[in-house]
Length: 127
Image (cartoon, rainbow, N blue to C red; front, top):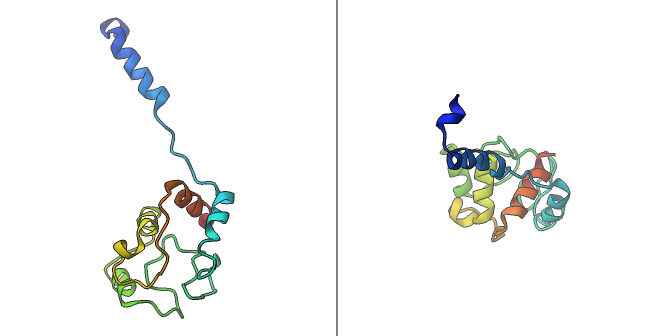
């Protein structure tokens, strides 16, 4: 009965929306391991080894500037004190432009401009 009241263009538009809505693509952990090579000089993807940068194996869900035994910049400590927690969204913003997202941090890396590389890196770090 409802179909009789709806015009063909309305039904077609509704079906197209359901069928063609892009699916959220999860990152590729294997590709992310290759992206991590850009980070490897300063970071380790475990949850205990600090280098020039803090370990990042358990970064998601962690408050910024809180790895024990790592000497953070005042900017990163302040970001954590203000409540910055490393979610996928915050990590993505940070990786796109670290100096802008957390002013005063010491990370020399300029960031990743490719959304795909960041998605892949996240998948690698979460595995």
